[in-house]
Length: 295
Image (cartoon, rainbow, N blue to C red; front, side, top):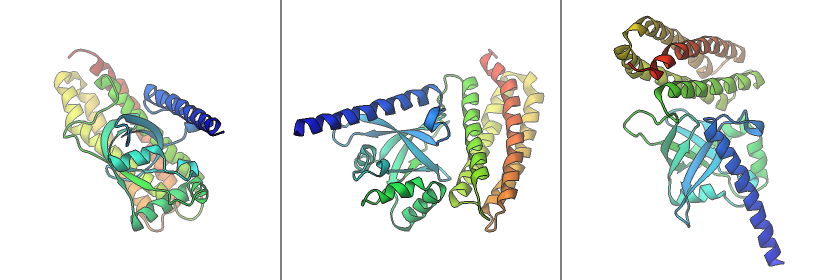
């Protein structure tokens, strides 16, 4: 009987590992885009160091945007009574690697405690009642972990083989996130926006601001120096950055207000979506051919 139970446990673990590996392979092959059950999910790949083995282990994990340079992951294990292996690993070695689909970076894992954990948990449950369902299945307090990006002192590590591909990869990440926010806005009911939805919007706005600032300071001068004929297109792109920045300010203001009108916030998101998609498409049409060609 013990041998039979051990074999059943091994079979279950193998099925889980096989499933995770399929998700990992699809995630990496498609720069974070997934199909099926996870098509509309926010997922990242978390690589930890085995607490017993010292070897790297990669696991697909759902995450919550949290503004700034950190995201939150929840060690639910589907409501199991034991913590997931990745959580045990990062408790032993808190430096981890995060793959977002568009970027890969090192991060420091910090387990939230006290009021900070309660606020983050409340946001998660408000956004998806499934987290509360997992908590009801177990007596352990499900941990919430913040993954703080570790600055590398240089440009971000984009999961792309060329500058031209990098533009498309980063743009597609913004498109996916904005599509998720639009869906969440549509699904939101009640007189105000949920706390996590507010954070999602503000995190997106911050990321877009950083991206456009980086283009203005580095990418556009690089292109202009090597392809002077691109001057008119770059001037238009800079003007579009200014217009989009105004729309971003409007959205930030809308979702930050204590008495946020969800309808007004949805309208701001729609305006931003239309302008941003047109901008991203034009930038790809103008810059990708130049970056793919010799100076």
